[in-house]
Image 1: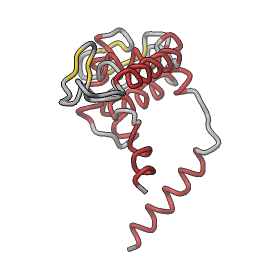
Image 2 (image 1 turned 180 degrees about the horizontal axis):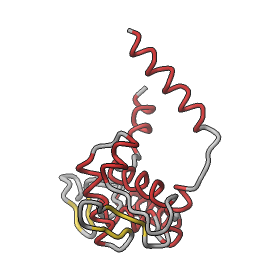
Image 3 (image 1 turned 30 degrees about the vertical axis):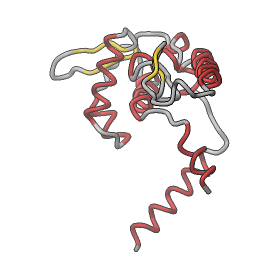
Length: 166
């Protein structure tokens, strides 16, 4: 049970990255020049406004989307998403991918660093994950299909229906 819990919680994509992908997928299917508000995305996908809005602002600062000010303002994708890697997206939104809390760049804030014998393996794993994320383009993810999606949606609907009937 412990191992299953460890693996389940070991690697998760930050919610802000999820909100960015949701927004980019939605906006990428709109006609060029068509503006999308943060509220429209949040209402449609039932995601929180503040972090989604902040993620859109960050992507605008980095030239992924363009922000239009005003009452009819919003965002539109302006960069070719096949040229934006998941590593770039992660770096701009949450910072560098770091799989442990004990080291950051070239220093450690861990109390057992002097005796730790897995620093090199963790650094190597972190480098491999960074390389992998650099090879995955945003378009690869937002345009992908997976055979398991339908089953997950069906199980979620059944679970939610059961929770409402109780």
